[in-house]
Image (cartoon, rainbow, N blue to C red):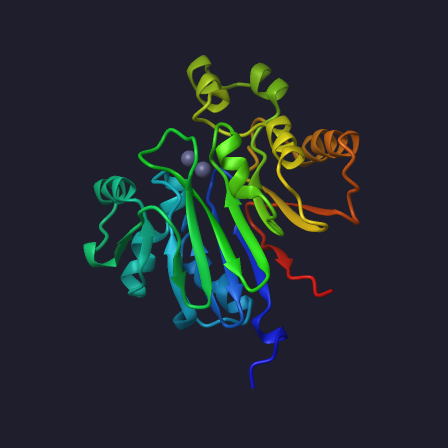
Length: 270
Ligand SMILES: [Zn+2]
Ligand SMILES: [Zn+2]
């Protein structure tokens, strides 16, 4: 008998940061991956540690072709014949970098698609890649959003965030650290540009501007190792949220994504 609890929704950020990104979204026994930027071995181990089986993997979504998002994809597809959901232009870029079989591609077009017991809705983000996307995942009464690698969250993207209960959102850099850090001028402008990454301030703004449910969980992801640190993330975003009237704790649970450990959000049953 399938109980309500056995179909609980969980989000596990297996790795997050400029060295590799991979998030697992689970409903019951089936799950999907968002990005495969860590080794196949790490993905398989992460899946095992969560008590899941690789044959329950319904597919992998690829946000864009940068190596920290596709680093483990070639080996993953060599071992497991799973669909890869991404944009056609992104796939073209991936094929120029990796040996990946064409038959695995499921090219994303507009609108949402049903995968197993979840509905996934891709949406365009602003990043210096061929056709970068974020995703919404509708799973039971939960809405999961993964949005990293975007230089901004404009009004159109904000609407995709509305009412999300489990959010993986980039908080990449502190503007002061970036400005006075070791990157050259070109790289600084790239990171801070409209097709770069989200600053702590921009992330806090997005959290304040989006339509929030009564309670939501957030994992602050893709933190730069050079231009940010967890203390600054907590201070900047925490202060801005409190000033904006958000009660951290009762209304919002905040966690940090980590490069080398799994960080999880589990559906809260009321
Ligand atoms: Zn990127
Ligand atoms: Zn990235």
